[in-house]
Every structure is written in C-alpha cells, then in structure tokens.
Amino acid sequence: MKVTVSRKAHFNAAHRLYRKDWSFEKNDAVFGKCNNPNFHGHNYELIVSITGEIDKETGYVIDMKILKDIIKTEVEDVFDHKNLNVEVPEFQDLNPTAENIAVVIYNKMKPKLAAHLELEVTLFETPRNFVTYSGK
Image (cartoon, rainbow, N blue to C red; front, side, top):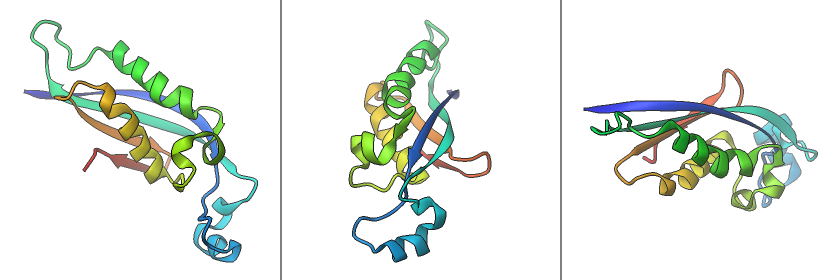
C-alpha cells in the first residue's frame, strides 16, 4: 500500500525571464514585464510530496523532520531572498521560469531521498499560477 505525504514550504526570490541570445525586443515580446532588466520577485509556495510504502516499524513513509531538513538545505537556504539569475548557479544558463525552478528543486532533492521513494514538487509562483514536476 503506497501513501503520499506532503510538506509545504515557501521562499521569496527575484528573477528575470529572458534569453541572453535574443534581442531585448524579442525578449520583451515573449516575456513581457517579466523581462524587466531590474528583475521582479515572487513569494513562492512549495509543496513537496513523497510517495512510498508505510514503514512497518515507524508507521512513516518518511520522517517529516528529515523531509523538513532536506527542504531547508536544498531549497530554502539556496533560493530564499536570492536573485535566481545572479546568485543561484543552476540558473546561470537556464531561464528561471516556474517550470525550470520546479525541475531544479526536484533534481536537488531526489538524490537526498531513499531510492524507493517517489518525489513530486508543486511550485506556486502566484496563488493562481503553479507547476508540478515528478521526474517524468
């Protein structure tokens, strides 16, 4: 029997959506106000879901303190109050869209989890705009 447990987290970060190989005009046409050269910010909300078998000894899929600590070190400490384009190495050559941020978070967290556990990351850029990535 598989069960999914989830933990919420949040971080605040600035970014600019643009491609270095495009003109300002093309970036502006595609990304609009998100192409602001002075950046803009979001209050990101994150839901990390772990699916797996319930451990017969502990009754846990994963100890939530362990999950909390992984989120803190792999996400909050890395992204919170940062300019993603400038301060986060993964976005030096990767546009920090919500889609790409979710994939980067997944890729940072997955190796920290036991191999038998499934991971799904849901990232809210705004209360109405969000993405989900599960490694597929």
